Image (cartoon, rainbow, N blue to C red; front, top):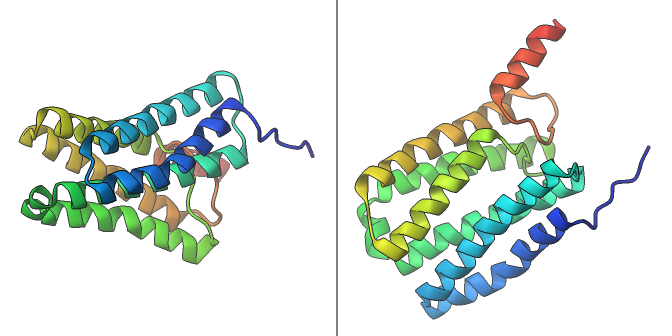
Length: 193
């Protein structure tokens, strides 16, 4: 059994995202929208970079997948918390779509913790896409304001991505990392039967 190399550039970028979380908390508590959106934007860019570097240079590891997922969860929670605290009137106006999005995101996390005693680290294509879509929404919202069409597009994409993760957490007999798509899992299972 070969030992994974855990100190590499993608893992350092993921660790940075975790280290940035207290500063994001500070920006929210301080009401500093400029600092908040800057830190969230940097976390989103480093998330894109760590995945691209890991795939391109074959630096993907189980440890890295879990670290990346933990950093993703932290960034997601901070982005959502920032929206709630810094833009409470907006979130209140659109509370039903936001609550449903949060429930659909939390459900697979909770089921995974109950079934497998850890968070999922699937790295689904849909979750990657929706992370970019949500990131664009948050950044453009704070920089240029609210655009209803893009908001509802972001909400619909989020629902679909979280439902895919939910299906996998319920369907898979054991938790795996880097699954990519429910369709690939079903195809692989069908070909082994």
